[in-house]
Figure 1 (cartoon, rainbow, N blue to C red):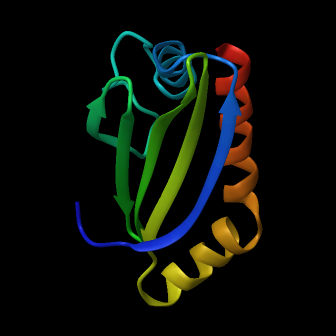
Figure 2 (cartoon, helix red, strand yellow):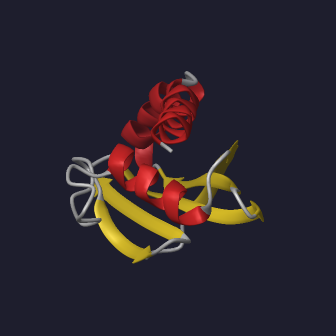
Length: 122
């Protein structure tokens, strides 16, 4: 993966062990929960390291980006799910795109919604 600038991190503690949280993550993020490669449109799978890390990346004309989920034990039946984002937005079109996606708060809303969905699925 190219070196990208850090954007943000969002996390949520889930009342589930890491294996259950991992399955919930795949259920929410992947088209087919049994296949981590079935990631959402606009992303490719960089790494799937069950039950600890799912790394996605993507690119288009205005941006290069990565979204990495990490699962950490907080106890025998509690997991902290973190979603960290990186990106580069080159040129004028990239600046405008960043303002629309990141600056508007849209990215934050979507990532936090995904974390809530993962919690509900666990």
